[in-house]
Amino acid sequence: MPGDLEPVTDAALAAASPEDRLALLDEAAARHVDGQRPPNTLKAYAQDWQVWQDYTAETGIPPLSASIGALTGFVVWLERGRTLRPDERAVPEVPERAAPAAPSTIERRLTGALAGLRHHKVVIDTEASRAAWRALKGYRQRLAREGVKLGRGKATMVTLADLRAMSRACPDTLAGARDRAMLLIGFPIAARCSDLANLLVTDVEPVDDRGLSVTVRHGKSTGDMVVPRRESPDTDPVRAWHAWRSGAGISEGPAFRRVDRHGNVGVPALSTTGVNQILTRAGVRAGLPYPVTGHSLRSGFATEARRAGADDLAIADQGRWVRGSRALYEYIRRVDQWDDNAAGVLDL
Image (cartoon, rainbow, N blue to C red; front, top):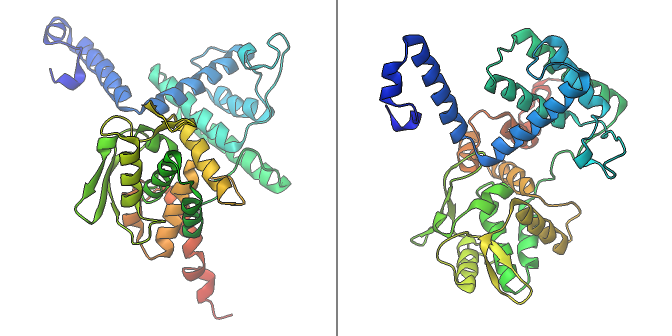
């Protein structure tokens, strides 16, 4: 047997009937696919499945229900604000409902619930899933008509001017060198916070005098990118990386780590939350009028690269988007909507 499908053994297959062999291979394949998913994705699916179980328990239906009523009811239940579990309440003994969920939250919960049902070998009728998605679409439309906005909304993109301002505002300390390296590497690879948190020292390699080669091995999307050298010290990722690495005295292990107030460098990697906090503080130091997050770097890279003339395939490859990604299209559309506009060609 191929190693990828272990622990199904030749002996187990030989002893099984043809039908049982297929079942064994299906189970092994499912384990293999689950093993390829990033830990953050698996964690999110587990959270979504827990919310689904809360819903089925509260409504008194079987956990493996996948009817039109069950799936659509899940959307409505989240719209109205789900009942919080005791461990989620301010006072565990006092029943409490969450605020109405934002459409993006419901979309994620529904996706996770469907994935959980399929994992438990539930056959989901196409009409049932379509009905749930239509219910979510209707919820979005109602909110739009009423002018109601729920959730945090889209992250404000970091422009090139903002990036320079954040880099210049980094203090002349070891922590400041780390923050500058994180910004100047994170922006041109369209990094998420999790990408920067999981980056290793050996994943960032100088390439002659041309720049850096960066490998993202863990996260929602992986790949190899190159980051060109820049002339200005405010925006040159090579100088920023060398300043941080030499100052921290690191040659292996996590690329970005905690630095205490005495300048001592920790051994563990920064958490995803820690990276996000550092980026937010960098924006505050620079006086930016919006909170900076990892996604601010990601959306800013896509938008600014398009504005500078990069084509969508090059942007997708550099930022590890799937070619034809809807999310990437929305960033590119911000730039193209005036020059590539159907109404603009009309002779009015």
